[in-house]
Amino acid sequence: MHRFLWISAHPDPQSLTASLRRDAVKHLADGGHEVVESDLYAMGWDPVLSDADLGPVEPGPLVARQKAATLGGTLSEDIRIEQDKLRAADTVMLQFPLWWYGVPAIMKGWFDRVLTSGFAFWLRDPATGRVRKYGDGGLVGRRVLTVVAAGDRETALGARGISGHVEDVLWPVLHGTVHYTGMEPLRPHLIASSDRVDGTSYDAERARLVARLDGLDGESPIPFRTLASGEYDEQSRLRDEHSPDRTGLAIHRTTTSPT
Amino acid sequence: MHRFLWISAHPDPQSLTASLRRDAVKHLADGGHEVVESDLYAMGWDPVLSDADLGPVEPGPLVARQKAATLGGTLSEDIRIEQDKLRAADTVMLQFPLWWYGVPAIMKGWFDRVLTSGFAFWLRDPATGRVRKYGDGGLVGRRVLTVVAAGDRETALGARGISGHVEDVLWPVLHGTVHYTGMEPLRPHLIASSDRVDGTSYDAERARLVARLDGLDGESPIPFRTLASGEYDEQSRLRDEHSPDRTGLAIHRTTTSPT
Image 1 (tube, each protein chain N blue to C red):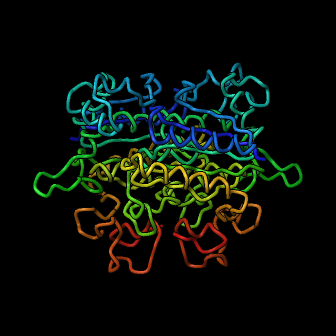
Image 2: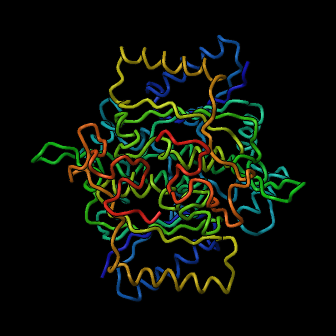
Image 3: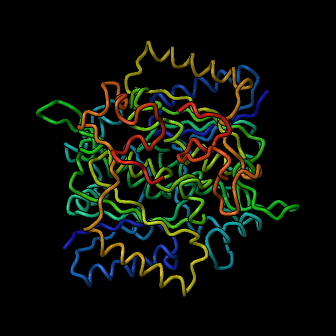
């Protein structure tokens, strides 16, 4: 039994994204899993981080004020509710249509506002005094599956596709957000050519997503290198002995990239 | 003389981002350039794309409804104002603090809502019938400079840095948005360790940005491959003879990547 937090972002309740979410959530619940939803459009989620998030805190850099509000319990209520949902979950779903090769603004603003300093990041290991990030952080113990509907055909988001491999396109989410805060990113579930999914192919897409969910326990996360491994130097650069003479995002994995 | 559109996104008018914008805009205006601003927080920009953007249009997929609203003139007024600013500009500045390795939600929502289908993309070349994208599109003739303030030190965003090279991190913006719509992305102007910029180092950062702006005419854009070049096959994959046997984002450049 898993405790899912299913976060989704699509304005249209008749969309492919919304239909797949409804069917998949029902499947999970029928299977005995706990599923909590954050349907950001339906909730009217406010994505704009502002001083109103923080309550009364001392002036200073934003990241410091955000930490003070987090530790002082003055974050606005909508943020605290989402943080509680995240605390309770062991599996986080991020489901969205790919807009401008990233998440819709309403979901980006969920990251910006909910993943606060002092909650998700900017925490120190009391033993070493080091900042916990990239494989460690406030959200350890959770796995994350991205479910991405893209207008591009699958090959365009493949290893030599013009749009970039989907795992490189989503680097800011998979590595810069999920891995950064200590969560484990699974390989994205890509629904390509999403504008062409019709009644017939919908059934196949639903079956493919459900099969993916049923097999999650057997999956390994993307093997991003961790900061704690010591593979990076004091200037945050990958040491020469790892992936020597190479550059590019693939060097930050412990095994050869599929891209 | 250039016509600048300076788009910026920071909630704090006392921030490094806001201070640099004010000083740089003044410098440009003093130099005889035209500068129009979109200070997204100050404008109270709504970043959430919704049906309210579109006016009365026929049901259908979002991208088709958005195109109908664009061509039919029923887009909401705040969107039309921004599109007019973009039409009038030859140089677009995108200035933002790097949040979760991307643009703040308020700026992502400017992309989501302003760069509509039928305006920025989903246009066909009447001669060939092909979709104009990746080096061509509705926004040709404009250059884009990103000005990015990041808490990371510079080496963390360098060629072997743990966060990924800044040009790879910003791939969804530089390639997936700017290049996709036919605009020309310049190399990002990175202000690293931005939390440590103080009174003294601020003067140096201001001078570095002003020098960058003064030298823009002599710069070449990032040499991303174009769709029209024929270097991609019918499945949108880079043909075998280009960057053979390689993968990763760097293969999509016509010259060796600096990353």
